Image 1 (cartoon, rainbow, N blue to C red):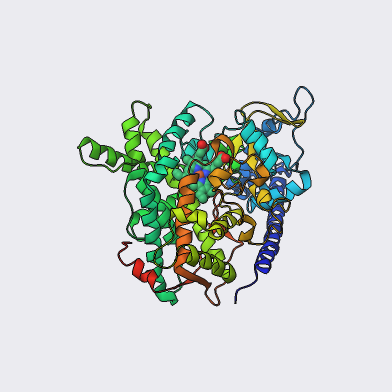
Image 2 (image 1 turned 90 degrees about the horizontal axis):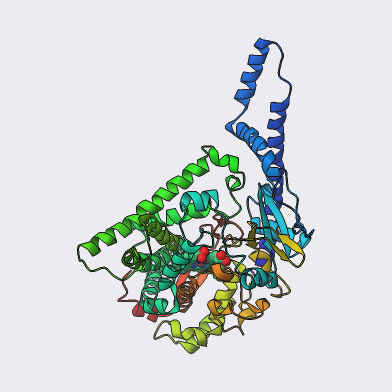
Length: 573
Ligand code: HEM
């Protein structure tokens, strides 16, 4: 039997608190390991030569690469410890915040569930506070008004990105719209991306989104065998998002979840999510580590190669076809090849821009479909209400379409509520201050990384009453799409902050929202979704470091009426 919504979420919070406690204990363990190994190194060595060499060997043997790394870090970071100025020439101080450890700063408090730690500190230090990770100062923004003041009103200052060693310098090799600083290269890539992500562009390829959502529902219908066979919706959601993006980017699609491209592309996206969290890599903040042959650096180089070989390879194939005069479907790759000389794009530019589409546009929308599928079986009353709306507005003789959304406020609200409760990127993609700035008496030095703390904003009781409750009703009077909601004058009235803010806001919002609407409204039209007895769904744990999706789960999907199979009859998977 399904649990009540309040119970499930408060239970989730309790467990999150327990997890947090576990991580605090782990943090203390890690710290004592560091102190113990340091103690071993500093303890006096024996004086006579025999015992000296024995002692040295013992220390060397006892010293893991980690210990030597630590020594290197300590030396080099003494310099870094004299971090940036804490006060400007007028005496304005950087925002208050946890001091953290020497060298590491607050890194060890943010290794897992960083959003919960940031929320904890927001309650302690306020809506604008600072933390250090290595030699990098971060300012954490936990209030919609401050987010708007900094990222929108002062977008000329707060629209750059830090060139992270792993993500920007290694995986994207200095290219890539998501990671480049606020410069002409970024402007060029954003302009090219917009030709495929603008409202007009999305209208032009909506038949692709329509077809992929039908294909998703059909695949679920077949696999669920009338509700008798449990289904893991994750690969299906992944393939749907992937096919939308491969069609837009390269002009082709995969016809099954077993197609080799599905596994390869989803693996690349997952590896990207696991390698490039905005606060998860110490190597990004302790420069000396960047000279060492660390496993993470090797992984990042391999990932770069995987992206260039896979997506750069597709671009080369497209270019070859164009040279041979063969017909090539309109897509981002074709646009880039046509603009190559005018926009001065080299092979790496094209491969990495295409990779940004495949990474930014696949795990994200798929994560929302997955969180929806994981959540909704626990709320039969919410499903029932949505299905009443569907039957009233759409009926059973056709599936919901794009034009129906404005007449279906409850289904529209369900999606916004899933996005509020399960933002796949709680820390978004941080911005960087490109010059010194003073905000309400607080000093934000040039090169400070600015993070939107969307967890605190999404769970703020001043904005969302009983925020821990999954309750679509809170959005029932909000007819705006998220892409429109970013423009509301009062930031407290914006629906949520899942797509970021300011000049770097997600340019894929329109396609993402349309894709999510088509898949979720059609799943609600087609199926009663239910939990499998004895297989509770874990909503607390998640996969990924920078992007979050639920850990694997299975649900039951029972067709609601005969027309489901009938209307999907001619649809190819
Ligand atoms: C649910 C779906 C999605 C979510 C939650 C999401 C979230 C985000 C966020 C938080 C950012 C950073 C915004 C900021 O800096 O303030 C971003 C940037 C970006 N997103 Fe999305 N995104 C989604 C879908 C898409 C799709 C479908 C595409 C299509 C290609 C896309 C392409 C991009 C690109 C290219 C950027 C970099 C923008 C820049 O730095 O100028 N995203 N996204």
